[in-house]
Length: 355
Image (cartoon, rainbow, N blue to C red; front, side, top):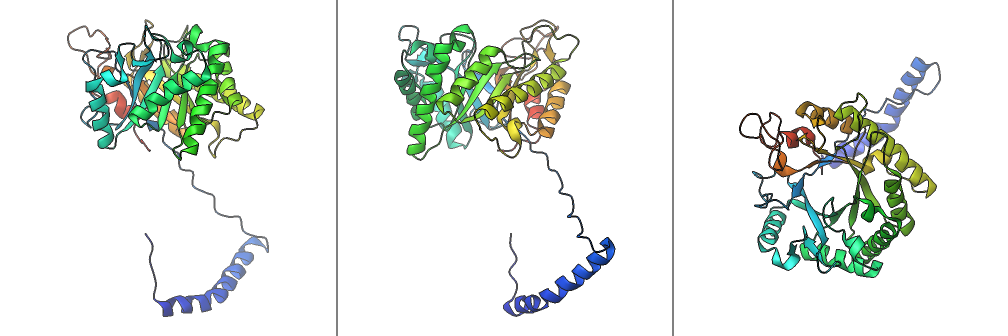
């Protein structure tokens, strides 16, 4: 990417440099009336969000994700790690399989990582019991988290915090202190841990419990990679479409996150808090009748995300990114219920995917 000149040519150029600079300066001043010319305007380059679909591991059979044919994006967020029904501080996949017992899944994860696919593990979700509820102390909760990230050698985790129990003040504080300790341990070991906090949202932004969950994280010293909002299953949309409701939700959440950071004297990166925001859609028909994410909506959201330098886009879930068979098409956990080609939502949300 560099070009090396001959030594003689380089010294000749250096000798001429003062004369060239003087000529340029004279010409410049003559065209600006003696004033300094304004520098040329920088060309703005829109940054694309990275895209990673969630994989619903509660499905039977478990969805495949470890090959490019099964997951073109080459990133996945695997959900969900929750507590064992009889041992509330023991991590399991979906409350069913302990880490060591999930033989087929463990093989899939290893194959994906060998193929250089990024695997992200998500804790929590809407079903089952959150480890942060079951583990009685921050130290026990940290140990539970650590057992998962060590077992799977993951560098990024996702905390999907939903429901009153998971969002209670005591649980939010316990989770925050455990994650802060986990991050500190990994920094000392030379392996930083990125943490995303996933929360439900309305078109007006985060609920007070979601804002409080972020506050607890920041107070504990957690360095959040970002806040990912679940951009579906809204209440009344008041005339909005799914995409305009989601744009409103993201804008309101950006303002809330900016206020939280300002209160803690945290300075976001060059792109501001937008680069630390993410959005997850539910392909096609959502859980709320009449609220449907279309392929056109997904492409519009991608353009919005790119223009605002959003950090992340996701979908729930990879298994639903398929057309339904039969007529009329009935959405299920295995298909979206809208006309589409396989993985067409993934393509729309990853139009300019960047690591």
